Image 1 (cartoon, one colour):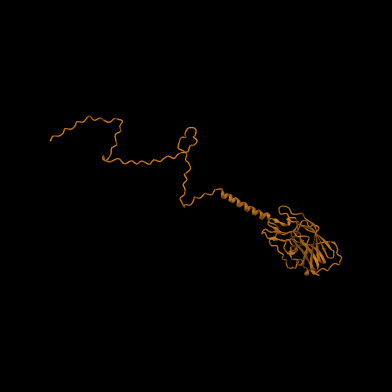
Image 2 (cartoon, rainbow, N blue to C red):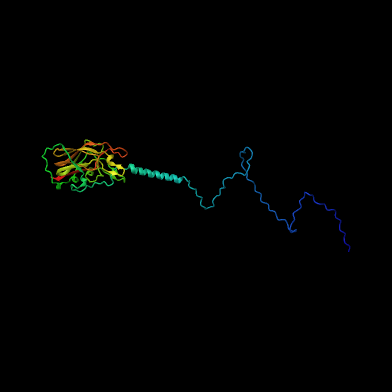
Length: 314
């Protein structure tokens, strides 16, 4: 069998220098990996707007606000933080209310006594050792009575005759309220309840007016006296100075005897010796009264906290 002679081949031409040889594949029989093409997405149209003038900015574009992410269905909405100034505003409002209330308690409270009532004290004997009797000075009568002087009672028989009296007064100031907002009355019987912190008072200047007391029986009177204003001191409030005070009175008795007593600015009981005088009624003529009190607590009232009548039943 004759072999075929190899066909003659032409000369091998080398590839051009600019051609990149293909990458080698290992193994030589491996196929190229399939290439995936991403789906084409149409670009969203951008609405036309004004074109910026000047050269385009260089550098990376500015960062915008973070994209809004809607909460999932049923998820709680995010809380909004409380502004930092809100607690300070609330604190200022609370302090203003407290200051206003304190100012009202300090300056706006009236001069009433939270313990004022209508009870009278029981009759009590007054001796030389009783500190509540106050000071006593002999008083010269301005007018002598038409009757013979009554015999002086035994000192052991002298008692306080004030608790059983009744009185007629020229007027009564309207009620006020104390710091606990309870009503306080300024009735005549406050003058013989044994409490200097309560008082009778009338509106305005009491000069020239008269108070009449009925002792309920004939007595031999030896001493009279009074606390000549509203003798109440309540912390910074001095109601004795805030109201009008009686500076001079004239005591008048059934026989016509009249005795003038001058009174000092003193919150204690001021007594005067007037007897012995037989009488059932006592008239107090207000001869001189001070001006109203000054300042924020000033009151235009004439006040008497207590009166006192000492003697013995006839």
